[in-house]
Image (cartoon, rainbow, N blue to C red; front, side):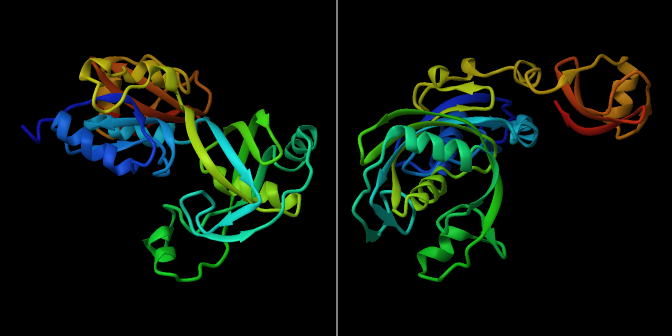
Length: 286
């Protein structure tokens, strides 16, 4: 029956040409749980890892958003579209320059690796005055160019045949592969668009362990501690202190460095901020 809380964490594989929100609707139908959300949106044309959290476990999403993501992309040079991918309207075409794999590697290494400001695509889920950017763009409204700070941790060129570049990208939150393609091509005075995109990894979740929304079951759920321990240190506190934290109280306790930690008691989780010898409750997850 809908309304019964189902705390689940599932590593779902999203097929191409399906919106991320359609996976959420499929999850609700299958598991009868209205409260659910995903970690990191995937463009409709993209495929790959889309972790779904439900029930009280949705509170964990915030603490995992800044983790690494890995993508496999195929970029086509010589074409510019309004969406920065193959689903959009072709705006411009240009003959492709003679490039070598080594030239592209050097360009990425020198100008894209690390932190940098990146263009936010007009067709994106970001909001402008409370409205999704893609909804504004679909109406033909010209959107002023916006940028955000992103980080490319590492990359690996899988193949390059003068027109199509197949590349793996390890990135942090907010990185747009479509924008990367556009800006990389601009460095060579050319155009580019993404024709294939697959997310291989998102946070703790790997593509080899993912399942479709049709085949996945509640027995495939992850234990929160299994995930959290990869990003936060676990601390043990007495039960009465844990209870005080769940009631929103601040507790003095020395011996810990400043930072975010988690604690577990009887299947319940507490995200804790420690600052200058005090424990501050951040989020209670039961």
